[in-house]
Image 1 (cartoon, rainbow, N blue to C red):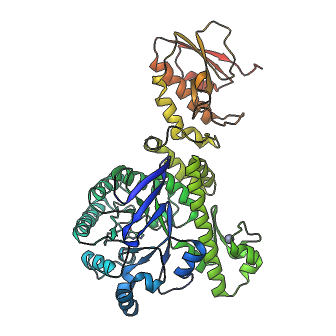
Image 2 (cartoon, protein in one colour):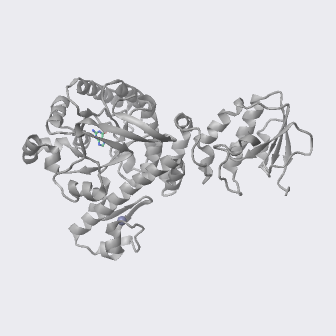
Image 3 (cartoon, helix red, strand yellow):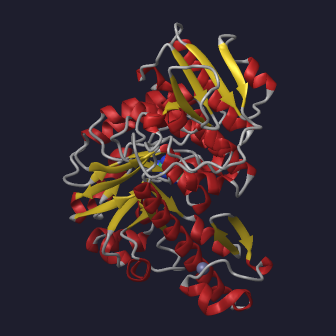
Length: 492
Ligand code: GUN
Ligand code: ZN
């Protein structure tokens, strides 16, 4: 168990956790969103973030303070909390972003970690190398080696009670991401940002983001607090949380506002294209669509930034509620309809159902079947994996309609797509007590058939009958010849 992080409630790979930040003398509940503050801009002041939005933490770039004559001296003298006027947790980045954007920076890890400590940062970051996606493998490997050396260096610096992050790089190579995660987790460092995903996010490559996070998480293990660096669009928070990300930083709220763009959990709209506002935050209630579009430039930017942030914080609260209720995957499913690339992300998440299944609780709120994708959820997989624990009679009938067979069998079990077979005694238990549509679909039937197949394979001595309601021929043909088929679709 890492000392600074405690997982409280889990759903799929997502969790509610507590990150204690000793230097700030406080604990923050995760998932948490840290708004990005640039001290040179004052769209939304940190004090307003705390008082009006309830922001408990923010992130700023130590490199900007380091390179600014004015801010540098004030930060060293008065500390970041005073300079920014923010009472909560302040995390700092190191300048690696500038490294990625402009190719070089003029500070070393030692210097910038010392500097972050001196200006009163609560969570500091070494100078990792954000290797972009799709680079040749030897570049990803050699840059990762440099990042590792810097993490080890950072771990060896005496930083008092300041937390220090260990960014995980490795480009789009899952094995490198996994190895980087394992290495980072083995250091004494505290928080684990997954780096260099911004180019993937900018290109809507959510499936690749999911694969990168899944790989890093395999190395990091389940008790490490994970930050997804640079992920600030609320549309993808639920997906990222379901993969096991705990911290987010958003520059998006301000960057999109500057371009007159209005964030929603279903995507981004230009303010001029809005006739009605799908939001009841104070900004939207006050101005309405026309009012917002006709504000003078600077006021419109601030108003949009405030709305964008309200939407982002609201989504984080919605995600926490979903984790507590055990319906995070239903929320991810809903968000996946916002954009085909999000659907790809959700499908990629379900490709990792095995990995999610390991943390998913055995029992939670009722499973809702809300799309074809639901058939691939970890709960379905687990039900199939556990069929071998059930004892079966010599002659077993599996009944979708619930009707008993005409022929003599020793016992009748229910068959409910997507789960497949289970004894009647379990019908009130999670997950087979699911809410499923009366009009089922092919994905659910295929999943149910996989369940039947597993049960038949695991019980070679048992004669099995299957009463199904008009399953497609090819699905039925995929079952063993040993299964006696009865079409129950005409039955009342
Ligand atoms: N901000 C966005 N991506 C990154 C990254 O990979 N490393 C650091 N240090 N900051 C980032
Ligand atoms: Zn709003």
